[in-house]
Length: 195
Image (cartoon, rainbow, N blue to C red):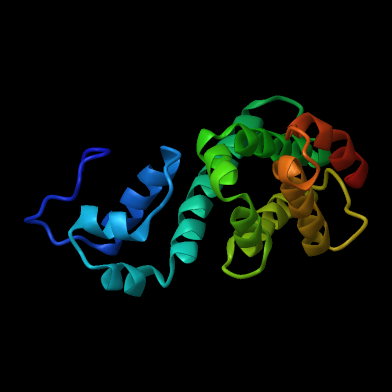
């Protein structure tokens, strides 16, 4: 399927087709409209809601797929850098991830259009974005700890949760304080936390 082209009418659209179209829509910085998405797929809105539950859940799945990909890319890039181990490796990965999130045109457009909803969807346990990000950060912490490079002064899950809250705070800095989001401002605090 070519990016931006509708699903051919002869093909029966699947949830995967809907997800891919929703992801392309979000990545372009366009508002995800369930009616428009269903129309482009040639299905009814009821089918789309049956597949994904709600617009919010579909958005969370789309954004998680982008966040997970970004986190993996940054993790691989940091692996290629010499000397990044232990807490400094965690700082490099989290910092690179935060920079990528802040620089994302899709994320900035979404925050500009639906800021309060974005914060609600991505900072609460339900519908599932924050627990996945917390688990991914916990896995990163555990990998570095298990290499024997550094010891954490608290439970991995607790430290991961605090790091995720730090990421959130700096991602939504403009909504919270009116200041421009800046990943560099978070780095000294992250280093202090991981000493």
